[in-house]
Length: 367
Image (tube, rainbow, N blue to C red; front, side):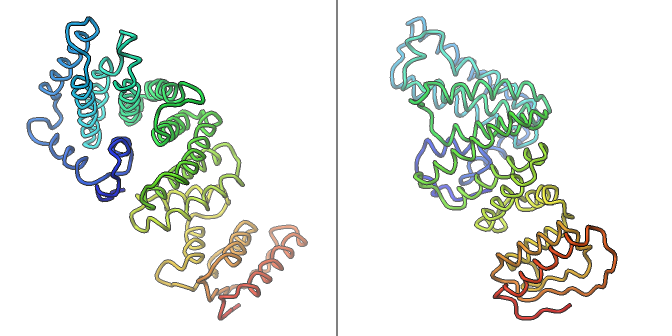
């Protein structure tokens, strides 16, 4: 997802979001193009790596008292580490995950000081820099399926984020995105229960954060739909169908704000929702379109081609109870086969007829 650079004025927020799926302005894309030029394409950036090595040496000199650890050094050091991480992300965006991973590993010594006086200096922001580098490393490791390396990096990042107990010093958005990444990687290795815990924690943090933080509505919707997708997927893997259904419906609501700029999140949510609701994916896609008045046949839903299983009937009822745009359904079939208990089937069909009658936006009914 991409939004204009002026959508976020806070420089700290900009840095946090730079290393997330949301692109602010053209800097990230420009960096990607730069590191795809002939000098750097699929090649280790020797000059840039040497600059980071030199910066690490300067930090060691500060620890020994040879170089002053003043505001000028802190500013230069921070810019060097953030710039190095942006370069690593550019390689990752260019599908060079192994180079990106090595670049992140190279700058790790620059994100931590062996001298307690320097490490505890709040203006040095060592923890913030290390969380960014570790999160970058985890994304690169995950891309090449080094899942344990990714989990180790994110576990350390999580510990840094939550250090201090009630007096947490990191930005809430940075913490939420770190927990969300950890949840996703835990899901990759089927540690679903553990992953779901952190995924729901991230979702709750985002809800609380966006009640006070001023961010573009589309950015909030993107992060929330992403978190809903992650938690819904883990619930499906755990067989918690009702929880997954609720999260899918919630996530799809957020994608309405995104429109076509949703990075296929809506279709991914529909795929998960179909599993949770035990209906065909195409059927659920039609249900979502019918509920919201999308697709070419706006306001019309042809149900003649579906089997009318109990799960499908329940979803039709839900659509009829919530739609504001559907004005016509078509049911053109005769099916005398009884696939369920007669009493149960009749009860659901009665609920369906009631939903049709009570749907105020319906204009025509054909059967």
